[in-house]
Length: 70
Image (cartoon, rainbow, N blue to C red):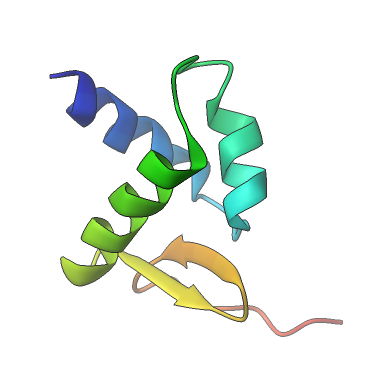
């Protein structure tokens, strides 16, 4: 159950592209025991499931269009 809550929080945090460090900083207050290794493992699992994409050092929701940099 706790893993599902973390997953939901992570997917909400990915409303915009973020690096691993940015995600960890955003989720750590909501999940105090969260380590970068655990967060990365969850991101890898979600990427394998096709729910998260990784490009250019940033994670985002899969299927979301990437806006070009101005």
